[in-house]
Image 1 (cartoon, one colour):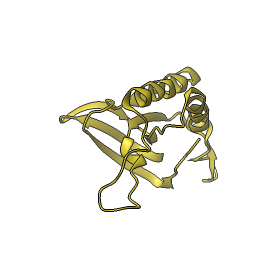
Image 2 (cartoon, one colour):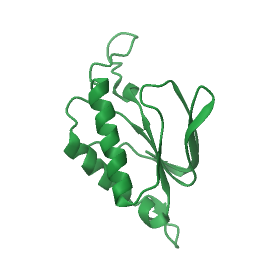
Image 3 (cartoon, one colour):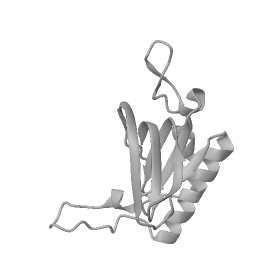
Image 4 (spheres, helix red, strand yellow):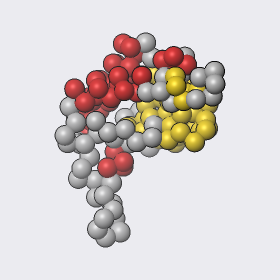
Length: 141
C-alpha cells in the first residue's frame, strides 16, 4: 500500500482505473486468505492513519482525508525467490479464489464509503503512481 497523490492502471494503453490523492494497493491473495481476512483488510485500509493532520503528523485515515483507493491484483507479490533464479508462485491462491476475495475487498471498502478504482484481474497491467511522501507499507492479515 502506498500513499499517493495520483495513481492509475492501464490495460493495452487504456486507463481502466484512476484516482487522485489516496492509497494505491497492490493486492496478493494466498491460500490461507478467506472472506474474513478480506473484510479485516478493508477495515484496516479504511482506518489506517497515514495521512497528515494539520500539524503534519500521520494521524488521519484515507476516510478522514477524503482520499480514494486504487486496488490492483498482483499475484507476483507471492513470488518465492529463495531457490534458483525463477520465482515460484505456489503460495499465490488459485485465480478464481483470488478474484473472488479481491471483489470482497473492493465491495467492503465501497460499503465503508470509499471511492475505489480497480485494475482488471488477470490482465497485463501498467501501473503509474506518484508517491506522496515516504509512505509505503506492507499489510498482512
